[in-house]
Amino acid sequence: MPYKAKFKVWRGDAESGELRDFLVEVNEGEVVLDIIHRLQATQAPDLAVRWNCKAGKCGSCSAEINGRPRLLCMTRMSTFTEEETVTVTPMRTFPVIRDLVTDVSFNYQKAREIPSFTPPADLAPGDYRMQQVDVQRSQEFRKCIECFLCQNTCHVVRDHEENKEAFSGPRFLMRAAELEFHPLDTADRVPSAQEDHGLGLCNITKCCTEVCPEHIAITDNALIPMKERVADRKYDPVVWLGSKIFRRSKT
Image (cartoon, rainbow, N blue to C red):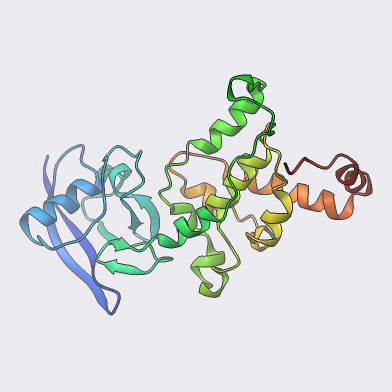
């Protein structure tokens, strides 16, 4: 049965803003994005919200719902009681443009800083050969829809704006790991991850993994293995010697 839900939605811009109260109809099977669209249609036509697919695959409608980073299109209203007030705010880590829309250009800047896939120079595309286990390992990371919820919830940048220059965040450390673990990538990603992208600043609280809508084990399968490789390089004499003798080709 339809009911009236109490909503608090952040309205404002880069200069100032506040939470506004709304009472809006909710129907069976709806998600929070449906309610935001109904608000636009009936009470707040100038409400700004970013969205695209409404299927949890584009990553556009990232926001915070009751303080938790989530996708608006994948958060069902049935997860809240009829008496509960649902608070919708923009992602806190990134600058607000207007209402629920934030400036996520920080993430695209960091993406450009990750060197691209570098196969052996003499290897033709049709000659690529990989074990299935390597394919599966890479495919997990490629499920990322770049919603940037992991970036938003990571307290290294969420609570410390000054870290943004030195820390690329879990999404792009995961990208570095994806390439590092690729058997045909010749670039050595470990020093760059540590020195250029701030891997050492991550203290593996797993908050990035907890909010990932694709359920990627970012911490366990990407960040921790990369940290282990850094530690091996620095403190394991056998690994250190092997890295000097069998250094990956840079060509």
